[in-house]
Length: 206
Image 1: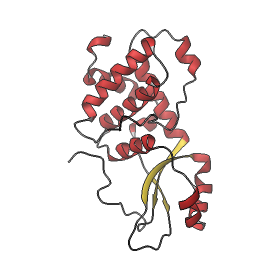
Image 2: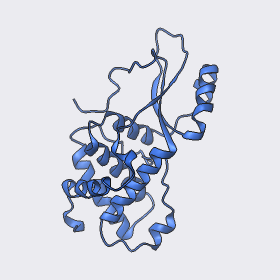
Image 3: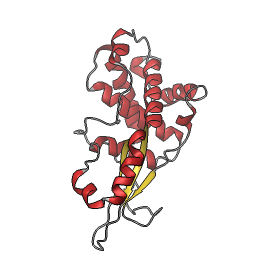
Image 4: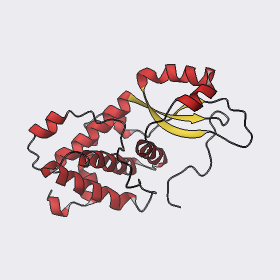
């Protein structure tokens, strides 16, 4: 695939090739785990998404349910960029939209620290995904510097690899997304009735 002519259709075709033999978790929608917050305030509701490491989920759930006020004042969510990503993933209608979200987020975080051929391929991925997503979603703000909760791929892999095509970067993005799916729980903190969603929380363009 030529660097200068990459399109979203070409990128997604490569993503689909890996989908048939890669981690099966990537073929499923995002499912939120709800942590209920007891908050007796008729004038205000609490509702928000976050990423949480699996090993901390039960501990956090118990803490929030027993100490809702302490949670509100002392527990900080992850940054706005990663929360924006999860909101988009939850709103995604199909695998193609989820693929574009994961690719854009991974490419953007890579561009924060890598240049050369890897950076140029990441830039092309970012642009192709942007063109597809921007017609469907309110996009990340330019000041959001971190869009995925963690980059699992060790920096030595980037530095020691001779990237000869964009395909390898697409596969790294899929691998990193799969590791996030395995290692993190996407959660929603909510003071609404269990199972109820907040209206007008979507990032989709109407």
